[in-house]
Structure formats: C-alpha cells, structure tokens
Image (cartoon, rainbow, N blue to C red):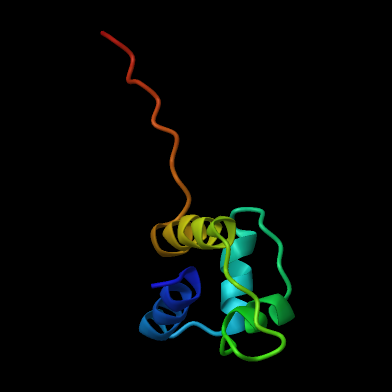
Length: 81
C-alpha cells in the first residue's frame, strides 16, 4: 500500500475535502497548495499524478492529531510542598 493509498483512505474515512487537508497541514507549518493535494489523489497513470512522499504523510498525520485532539499542552511539574 502506497502513501497515496493511505492518504486517500484517510480522506474518505474522515470525510475531508482538499481545503481541509491544506488547513491540517498548515497546523504543523507545512504549506502546500490545493492543486498539489489534488495531484496526490489522481490515478497513477494520469500525467499530473504526484507520489505522496513520507514527509507529506508524516506531517499530515501530525497535523491530524492536532486537528482532532487540540494543541499539546505543556505539562509543568507541580511544585513540591
């Protein structure tokens, strides 16, 4: 299973649109255009197909965690009494 397949399955399962995927990637400061996202979802034999690299998938998954759970809170140790 390729990274493109994983990204497609997540998009369908979570009912995400291309603009929502762009917003999720922006949460981790990874900027891509809507056209680049569209190229990831094309068929492999299409001339504008773009393979999804590990970096894009990794940043999408990290952004998805922030999108679904919220930003990570800094846990400060409680003062000792």
